[in-house]
Structures are given as C-alpha cells and as structure tokens.
Amino acid sequence: MEKIIVEGPAKLEGAIEISGAKNAALPLICATILAKGQNVITNVPRLGDVRTILKLLAIMGCDVNMAWPKVEIDTTDLDNPMAPYELVKTMRAAILVLGPLVARFGKAKVSLPGGCAIGARPINLHLTALQAMGAEIRILNGYVEVESKRLHGAVINFPMVTVGGTENIMMAATLAKGTTVIENAAREPEIEDLAILLNKMGARVHGAGTSTITIEGVDELFPANHSVIPDRIETGTFMVAAAIGGGRVTLNNAEPLHVQNIIDKMRASNIEVTTSGRSITIHAKGDIHPIDVITQPYPLFPTDMQAQFMVLALKAQGTSMITESIFENRYMHVPELLRMGASIDINGHTAIIRGGKPLSAATVMATDLRASASLVLAGLIAEGTTEVLRIYHLDRGYENIVEKLNALGANIRRAKSEMY
Image 1 (tube, rainbow, N blue to C red):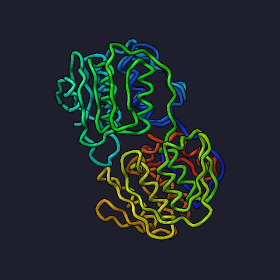
Image 2: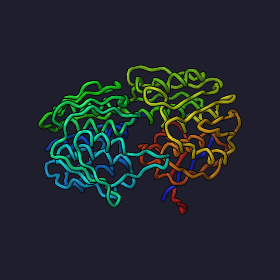
Image 3: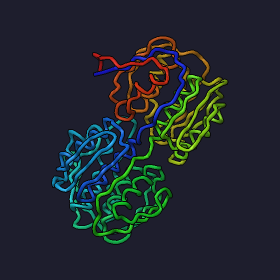
Image 4: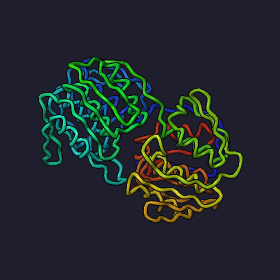
C-alpha cells in the first residue's frame, strides 16, 4: 500500500500533456468484443481500471498486447463470455462487457459490479433495456445472466440519464435485428467517441452527442483502429491545480470544447483561461471569486469535478455553494478537508464553503477516485506536509499525477504506507 506526500504550499508553472480519457477508453475496449480480429486503440491511459478491463478480456480469451499508450486486442479466440467477481468487484465499468457479449455470443454472465462508494448506481436501467430488446435475464448468486439468440431493435426511453446504460445499449444494438432508438441518452463526449469507433467497425450509429441516438443493426462488425479522446476530468483537475497555485499553466493535448462549462465557471471566478487549438492555459493572477455550482449531466457541470471545485472554493475569497444533484453520497471528502482546517457545512445536497482561510497539513484518507484528487489539491495549498492515504483510488483514474505535478513545480512524492 502506498501514500502520497505533498509539501505545501506550491505555485505551479509550466506545461504538461493531458492523457487519454479513462471513461472513453473503457467502453472503447469493451466494444472490441463485437468484432472478431485485431483492434488497435491508441492514446490509452496507463491506469488501474484500464489494466483491469484488459485483464478481463484476456481471461475471456482475447490476445491483449499492452504497449502503452497503444493497446492491441485480438478478439479472434474470445470464447468465454463471463466476467468473474474477482475483477468486476473493483470497477463498475466492467458491466460494459454485458451488451457486446450478448450481441456477439447470444449470452453473457457478468458479476454485479463494484467500484467507488459514492452512492447507488444501479444497473437496472441496463437490464430493463436489454429485456426490451428481447433478452432473458436472471440474477443468481451475485451474477447477471443474459441470453438472447439475437437481440432485436426497440425504443429505449431511459427514465434518467445513464452514461453506462447508453454505452451498453449502443453496443448491444449494433448487431441487433432492426433499429434501436435510445431516448434521454447521455450526451458525454465519451458517448460520441464510442459512436465514432463503432461506425469505423461498420455500425450505423446516428445522433451520438444528442439526447436521441439511433442504431441500425447490422449482421457483422469488423476490427478497427482508434485514438482515445483527451480526459476532460484530468483536464479540469489540473485547471484547478493551476488556479489554486496562482501560477500560469498550459495543458496540451486537451479538448477545450469538452470542458467548456468548467472554463465558464473559472472565468466567472476571476481566473484567466485562454484556449488555442488543443491547449488550455490557466492564469490565476488575482483573488478568486466565490463559486456557485450545481452538478448536472453533460454538457452542464460534471459531478466528477465537484470535489476538486470544493478545494477551489476554499481558495476563493468569500462564501461558495456547491450542490451535488447526481449522487447522494459524494461528500465523503468533506470530513477530511475539515481536518485540514476547512470551513464547510453540508445542508442536504448543498455544501456551503467559506473560503479564504489558510489550510494546515494533515494526514487524510481518500474515499473515492475524485475525492483522492481533491485531497492532493488541498495539500498543494496547505501549510506543511500532507499525507494522503488509500491512493489506489487515485491510480484508477489519473495517469502519472505525481510526475505531472512535479513537472509543474510541486513537491510531491509516493511512499510506502502501513495504513489501509
């Protein structure tokens, strides 16, 4: 077990490269199941979750070659449509193998998923949609078993926006008989990236990026090459790191359009943000103004940036408000920030943050992926040495975060930890 040690405060300056998006890479890798043959995915981030999904495909019979940032996946000999508990328990995204397995093999057995403890994220929406497409579903001994000789097209109207559900049904529908229409579909850039790959493979997916996606089923798909889009949450996290440090930082290999809402919120907080092509430069040269944020599905403010923006609010002069409307249990980083001297009150789904007060270093414990990032950010502005425990969460979603922060002038390192 490791911990991260942060010496603060730190002013960041310079430029770094943003990695490929974890939340795009995972469904792209799962999509390779649909076509027999050699697939090549590039700009793949070297992360724990990515390793896990690739290990899962290898267990199923795929030949996987990890030559980071390129991954080669040969699905020719895939013959075991089962995802065991030992792997699925560590990450929810493993449920994304369900749709493509049923589409290609007519059956799948997948363990009920695990992942970050940030609230209930049931897969019932995935299963109900597959049932509407003709699948028979059983849940037995902690596994979901799905069978269908061939799925058929259907109109799927999700009662709430679900990214994973949209991705699973998109993949399942590519080989279904007839046309599938997904209403109230997720609109994230990762959905569009998946559609681009599926269409390269011979699928007929239309409308990705809007709330209505139409998929015309085909009889066969073929291997393809594809490059993963930049990680918008990593981009947003480093934007916050730059802003709280008061320096000037440029993020290359970024996609400004994917973080427009974050850019808008930062500019409203008196942070200078400029964009040029695939780069973003942040310069916080004055007082940061208070923040008013409500998390909403894309293209509005992302829930995955809520914890990081709370640290930005702690740096702001005045009182900020952050409302979490996506998950009911995503303020678990707050007690850790309070240990560092933060002034935060929780009223229902809203956090009231009184900023402008200095933080002091402490030993803190990460509870989930984005909470981990927020505690590292807090360490960058706290006086003294902050130790962040349970950083295995962090390694699930940030590639080389220690190296990247040090390249910008931070004093941060990993060390062995005896605590769990």
